Image (cartoon, rainbow, N blue to C red):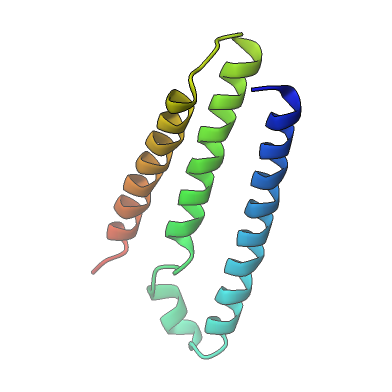
Length: 104
């Protein structure tokens, strides 16, 4: 990929991450108003799984960007997408394991 297209993809990814962070924070605040303090500490966070998934996708984008810019490897597009899917899958597994830890 050219540097201009990579910058455009990184810009869209940054915008998406900021938008999702604001969405999940606002969603948490709207649901936390009705929950008493005792119940809020016992329940797992609703936004934990999507947050970890977004972090995994961001990590996958970072890996693909570093490989393409600094290793000078000419990655096929399918390999770049595969790295992103693997990073997202690993982050979903981690989010599921962390969520099961809160189950009683």
